[in-house]
Image (cartoon, one colour):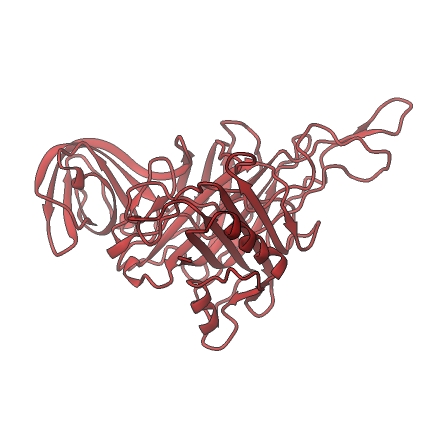
Length: 451
């Protein structure tokens, strides 16, 4: 269940009536997570219908990483300045639009701590939700610092994802992509079609999929092939592409593949998550990414294309952080994560971002990187630090929210994302509400704690 990364302070609405001459509709923003897809055991992850992929389950695991708001440092942003205001005749009241939605567009090369067999790969999350105030805010009114949300499934569930049109992303290895809302979330298809297909198991754990009329290319290595129509259930799903033999034959990771011929429908998906033995760095050193929107759906966002965003470079977590990513404490103590301590190395980046998501859902039988929906409680902690030495400390006040939720309903899994990012904010121009999408581009490392 994906959640907003940041939120406005103002209550959603059309106008902010005030007696002073200041701008109305102020907002704050937070950071976000490097991506929702995670490859599964042995690396044969499958991407979910309409959204983020999750390992091993062919389903949609999905983030909870997303959100945004306000202009700021560290990126090419345009500020709505609280929207356009007008005063009534003979009065001093001013009516200004306030932000109604937040967004995050997270573009990451993601890997998983403790699961080297999962590989790495492009993970794209496009998450637009209505604004929800945080339960904790370290630096009110500023972009940096930590924020936290506590959700109760029955009384105050997380805001739903919304369709806001087509998102275009240029500057990636493999060429530009376009991402569209598909039922429950955004996906980034690069080709789709139908044709007679055959499956031929190859080296252990892989299979050749030959589809008449397909147009596979070298750019598809590191993407996912989603196939339906097979009689053998193990031959259909979404599988990482590790090689392309010809325009009609792709080699994928599918440990359960069996020889079969069938009439298939297929889609090649970009940004669906890590790929085992992936030879491609989808966000190369020096990459600059441009993001745009073609408004649609609920029409809450309409901003110009961003200026080129310098991507955050690859990094190695320091020794203490590598251990903490898979053993997040639940004692309410502060937690420091980063790449600036002993054993770590930091490539250049504008920001260090951490996102922590909990679930109390049933993880029995699920893949190591799956995040089932919460049964009762969910906590989101999202932190941003610009510049610095590549480390970030989550205050005890935020970590105590995890401790308290765990006491009410035992947490079954915690997903922690540590990211090094290029950052930009894109804000609607007046007279639209000053809704802002925070755009993160770089490299991320996911860790999973099983209390």
